Image (cartoon, rainbow, N blue to C red):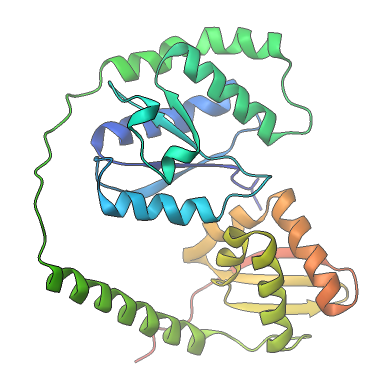
Length: 268
């Protein structure tokens, strides 16, 4: 399996997307241990958009001592412009000095043996003009139209989302294969234990299609469509949390392996 992702880039709007795409290719050239993953979907390019604030709240709940969340502010945005929950985290303006601080944070977070400051400074100085060129040539901000939605419409939409999510979970439960070598109750206890340590890892485990335990190896299978979930779980930190909880639940130490396989046929 390829090396797991360890930097997750989310974007909001066309301008943000351009910078996010540049960061995806730029970061590994500055910090060789960086393996960015770029979201395929965006949030509206508006700090006051409820969906962006909701997304930020969901992300904030997944943050623990081993994770970092930073915002990258384009144009004239200042840290004080960012409302909670995103406003609670490190805000970086898209300037040379702030970007250098962001790179330093990433460098220290990704590896037990980060690049020395002198080496990082030299690489950053050489690579900054490339990122700066992208930032300087961004298109102008498109004005956003503000509108007030009818309360009944918003309630109806929320109910539809909740019902759709419940139906999706029912379908996914039917598609799940029974675990081999361990019980369903043990799988549930394992995920619950990981949930207490890091919610984000537990949420990814919920998407596993089946579990197997054999000869001291815990195999967790995902469909090929969810390969990125398996890759994100392949980090040393995530595997360590799962192994720790697995020993508590199963009463023995196990090796953890993530595998992908073809998706089952669509249910009628």
